[in-house]
Image 1: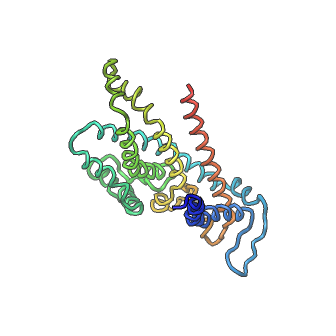
Image 2 (image 1 turned 90 degrees about the horizontal axis):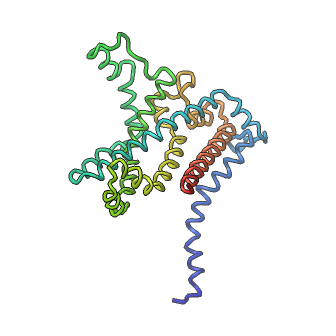
Image 3 (image 1 turned 30 degrees about the vertical axis):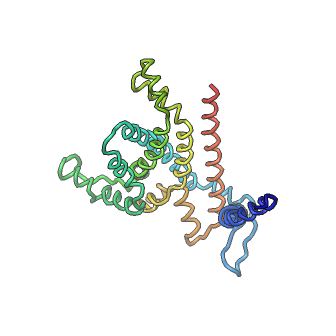
Length: 294
């Protein structure tokens, strides 16, 4: 094969993926940013008026949008650490057993591949006013005289959504951490045992430093996933009561496809969310790099 033609072939092979990324990634992002500066209208006969930063002012001055951002942060601060802790714990337990590992992996990973809508409907049935949990508390334990309205107030409904998010995410974290744990050289643990370190000391001084890169990756991915939360809230509460349980994606969807059709407002909100995620990612990386330097 003529080596002089190799670079040309490489460029030709790069054209299809570059076109795909440009059409389905870069163009939507640029279009969204442009839309955020307009009172965007859909239709050939519609005129989209330039409004500058007015959409951003509306988002930052909207108490429901601020509440949605706060709810999303609360969801992230609860679900991300719990998913990582439980996922790492389960991975460590599975990594240390010799029999039945496949069964345990399947059991913990099954919620991950189950539809979000199905599990959200299941949780909605369990925590409904006349659901399974209230029946158990009232009729079996005699713990409550009246049904508890789990999904009718802001923080209790968000608590249910957080429980759902943690339960469904443990399996994904388990698989990622298990792969990282199995890649740690066994010689490290042999040296630690020779030095007289117990199991907890081996975990803190050998295991955690060895999988720090995986922990960083998981933290970033889970933070992004928390800001992409939609289905649990949409199914459990629909943002109610009175938009108290909205998260950024449910409020964005409502503004885009409601009767008001505020697509420019929704685009501005999405840009703000993207900026928040970028700042969170930088903070996580800077924190990790600072620890590495120490």
